[in-house]
Image (cartoon, rainbow, N blue to C red):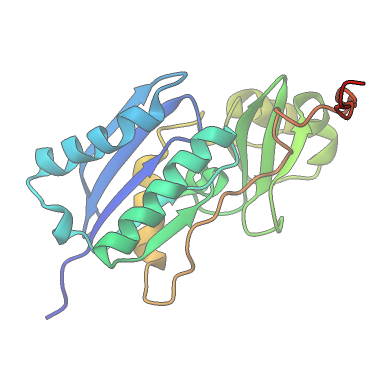
Length: 221
C-alpha cells in the first residue's frame, strides 16, 4: 500500500507569508499573513505552526511545494532557499510552482493569469499557450490579448476581463493551497529542484557611475 501524500506548500514572493498543508487532495491547514517585510524571520515559525496544527511531524511529509515567482526578488529567494534546504534534509522532492500557474489552478479552458508587478505593471501569461510570463504595462493588455477568449484570473481580473469581453475568474487568492495541489501532481524522484522565476532585472543594480580614483601611496621624500 502506497504512503498517503502529505504536501507542505509555501510562498513569500509577495507582501505576505503563506503556507498550506495538503493530504490526499484535502487542505488540512492554511495560513496567509500580509507583511511588507519580515518573511525570512516568520516563514519557518509559520511552517512549524501549520504542521503542529494539523498534528503531523516533518518526517511525515512526502513532498514540498514552493512559489518561485515572479514577484519580489528577496521574497522569492527566501522561500526557494527554504524549500531546497528542507527537501535536502528530509530527503523529499520540492516542486517549484509559478504564481501564474497557481492563479489558474482549477480553472478549465484558456486562462489569462495576472500577477501584480507594481508601478501599473503586471506579469501576464496565458497558461498552456505562452511559454513564459511577460512583464506588461496594464494599459497594453487590451492590445496584447485583444483576441483572448477564456477566463482572466488574478490581479484586476474583473477589470481586464470586462475590457477584453472575457470571463472573470476572480482576483488573486492566497497561492499556497493551489501550489500544494499542483505540487501533488508533479512531485516525483526526478523532479528538478525549484529555481527562482525572474522576469525582470532586480530594482537594486550596481551603480553605473565610476568610483573614486584610488591614488597610489608614495613614500615621503
